[in-house]
Length: 301
Image 1 (cartoon, one colour):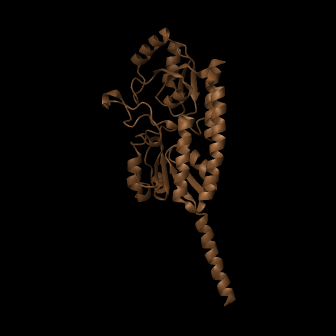
Image 2 (cartoon, one colour; image 1 turned 135 degrees about the vertical axis):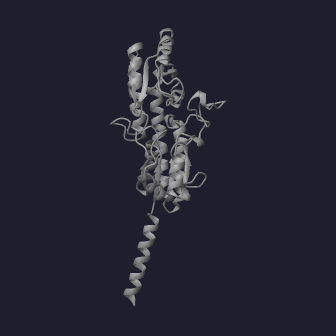
Image 3 (cartoon, one colour; image 1 turned 90 degrees about the vertical axis):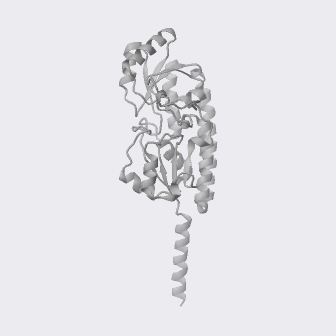
């Protein structure tokens, strides 16, 4: 009788332990949110990223492997602001997981938690691939990212209260380390204030807003449209009057247009990582900012 009771208590104990350590399956649309979930969740989250730094997050294929992973997800984290409108709705429909549908507690849209830049006053397809909710690339401002991190931590606790104390400890650690890093980044980046650069796409609006840099022009004649010879010629004439220090592009964009404009204008081309995995040494959000600033500061040395 005693051995049966001991066995029963042992089984109950194992079930309670498994419940307490169950954690969450997290499906992130982009690498930056996968990295943030790992930083805040630690061993309590199992994270999948739908895209890599080499993929344009505007356009990916809703592959069966992604559908299967989203079907098992407890939490879906995306930039939002229509960045994934070309593929995420189909992925959600095919996954059939009600918990991660838009508006549910398992759906987390990062951009909608902060003030957004580049919100169009008028929407017109002739103006290119505009986002009605504003520029979605919010992870490139560390202050906005911190706001998002605090909200994401609360969502982890809400969805997995058994591990709430662990999430809270990791949130406090991240908050302290991130704020210390912001202070160091802002001190080192002071020489970048007012620096004029040309961009491939409007990925960098939040970075420029934070560092008070100047967007001198874009290779894309309109958002989402490929660079054209006429636009590069027009941009070259503008640079002759008011030159820029560099042409910026990132891993998921072809370097051809940037290199072509560099040949025309003599302006240096600089590749920035944009997200986690965008360079060999960019393994988390901290190194994303470290490497981005390091490459920009070479322009003013």
